[in-house]
Length: 165
Image (cartoon, rainbow, N blue to C red):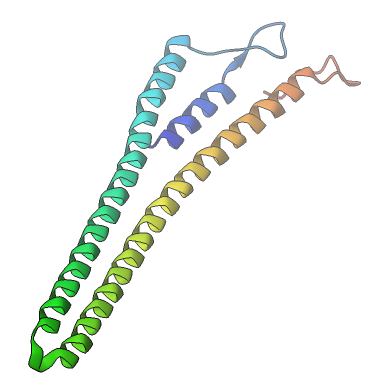
């Protein structure tokens, strides 16, 4: 189950808890059940964080591989350029061909860098959405708890009237 779903379960458990007799701010729930749910949530959150770290490691690995490939292509282009220049009868042609190879290598390297950047951006955007949903769920839970706290402490004209929950 998703950690956000676990948080929603805990919020529901707190919302459904019975009020402590003679108190408007305290409530009762099964301690063991709450502890079990919090422990499950605690065990699931590190997994989500490990997945995010794995995405970042994958990104770094892809970026490094792209750089190595770009360097290799550029090196091959420069080597080819040097080899072609050394041949006397095609010196001018070799310079043009070497420049073309280097240009293609740089273009390919740039393309690879852009692909890696797009992949990393997508992975980080997905992680950002996950964190945004988690934050929104936490904020909703806190808002509900604050609202319940305010309802429980309201001292109006009808102080004798029972609370609605």
